[in-house]
Image 1 (tube, rainbow, N blue to C red):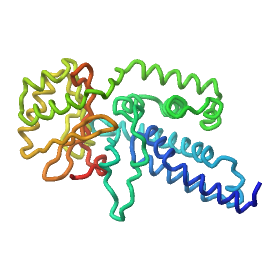
Image 2: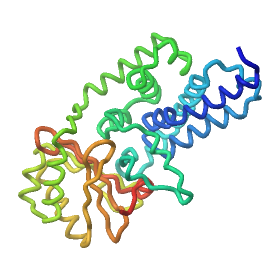
Image 3: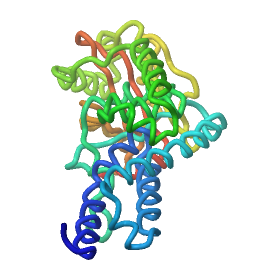
Image 4: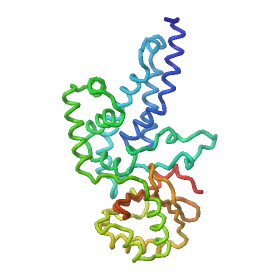
Length: 304
């Protein structure tokens, strides 16, 4: 069985080894790397605040940390709903680059976002649907449908019955089912490249041809930079809007980058990232553009 010291050492190693999973879980629950990292830090703070003998007695540090983290995220989501009611314009999740594009800290430490696995559950379309859920729906749905936790375990985490958790997950799935299904990323890189070229050329006709007639553009400036406060609807209106933006921002450089696991665009001016755009492509046409302009959400994007 091992000595108490050996059990303590194993538990300490196991707890540290959970960080990647925990950050990924928290990002999907909160839609913000900064808030996710803060939530994970709070979970670890509570772990280390326990007496060593109590930590050594915990059979599964990962389960303990997941429980605490989920409860922290529930609290954060509750307060976030109030904050976002006062948010200027549309609120969008913080965009994620791929691993090669992380901004690295001054000491050479990896960005916490590097611990988030890029898959369909971090696609911008999926995260926007998660944002429409109640805090309880979101936490239960992420735990069960994304991370495959069984309902009895989730019930203990969120202090509800398994039946109530099933109802929350079912309600969340209806929200997902009512939203447009995200298209496969395969082939979208070509469309994104043609879109970038048309935007750079201010070719409205080409832009209209690449945009679905019912396309929607949502921009998030957070009240800190200029951005449309309401969605721009319709391919032709979006094309004219983008051409106007290009006219107003001479020297804008467009780069093709991976955004939340899919081909997207990064707009830079004077070497600084001004906009990160996630795009959804269906049948060769762009149906959704999520343009994040809030500088507080772009700190993890390199200037290169």
